[in-house]
Image 1 (cartoon, rainbow, N blue to C red):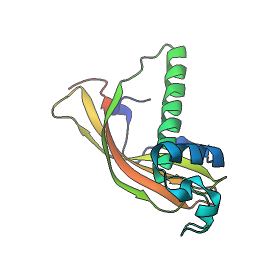
Image 2 (cartoon, helix red, strand yellow):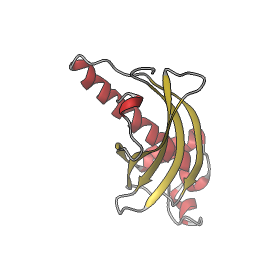
Image 3 (cartoon, rainbow, N blue to C red):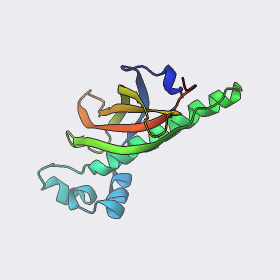
Image 4 (cartoon, helix red, strand yellow):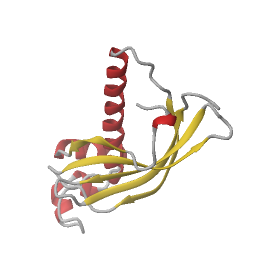
Amino acid sequence: MKYFDDIRVGDVVMTGSHTFKADEIKSFARRFDPQLFHMDEAAAAQSHFGALCASGWHTAAAWMRVMIDQQRALEDAMSARGETIPMRGPALGLRDLKWLRPVYVGETITYKSEVTELRVSNSRPEFGLMTILTTGVNQDGAAVISFVSTTFAERRSIS
């Protein structure tokens, strides 16, 4: 975790990876995206996907999980060193969400986030606004998801 003042456009964070397993794909789909190609292998084989695949929402939720885990690990390390942890968030939403290709059983998606824009918040000058492009790629390097989000990041000082 960094203060807004220490973040630069072009900074990249490797957020983490997640491997999609059949049972979790089906479980997520039953609860949140109950389309047959996410829940049933036979139906998926007859679909335009040709095999069971994860919901796009599942790929986004998996990013959220690995992102929070990564942030908590950074906060724990900072706390252990006696450092002050800068406040982050809330996020202002996301845009340009794209599911670029299906995520099949056994695929591992690695997520990374790159800072694309920084500006001081007009309404909350103790914070900056950080815009981030997040992408996820499979084990072959093929992009499967991308989106842009903006979130608050605490400034070290107001001058």
